[in-house]
Amino acid sequence: MEKRAVEARNALLATDAAGRQQALDKAKAAHEEVQKHLAQFQGLIRESHDMSDAAKAKAQALVDVEATYAPVALSILDLTARGEHDAAVRKLNAECVPLLARLDTALEEYEALTEARRQSLTEGAMQLVERLQMGFSGLALLSLALSIGLSVWIVQSSSPALRKALRMATEE
Image (cartoon, rainbow, N blue to C red; front, side, top):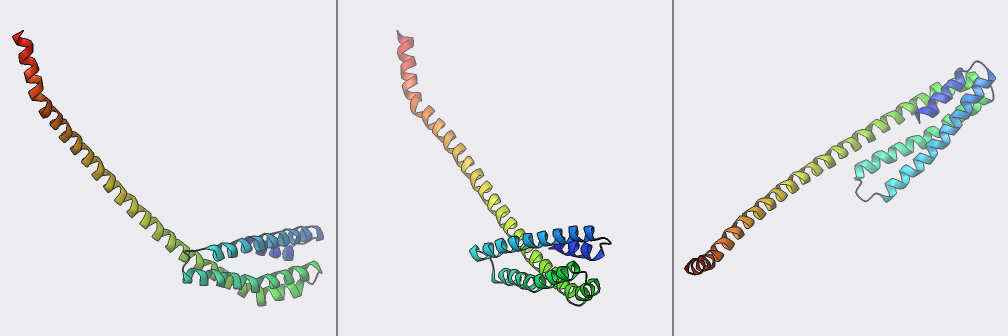
């Protein structure tokens, strides 16, 4: 999204036709890339099974602002391509800048929500790892105790037979 806005600005600021056209081409390519990524994003949201309602609302707000912003950005590119520099600047200042601010806010809010979710998932995973480590440690101690107990039992069970065998061996 940022690349599209930067290239649209570059097209407006270009001092020659070649520079303007290059920036316009880059802005249009960036717009297509944004639309592709936005479609993927919306697909991920639809397929998500554990996304909170708050996260879905923030994601939808982002999509809605982009849906409003995209035609304005394309209109500015069109005005720039036709050489209507002053009209493009007026549209940029009157419509595009406020929409970019809304888009920025929507992105920041969504990022804050996803960061909080990431931290929550990380903490949950760390707690699970700690519980598993404690469980495995307990299992290891139990195995050690059973091994020692079994060793003692084997020695005690075989002691009478070994003594008898020793006596018989020494009597011969």
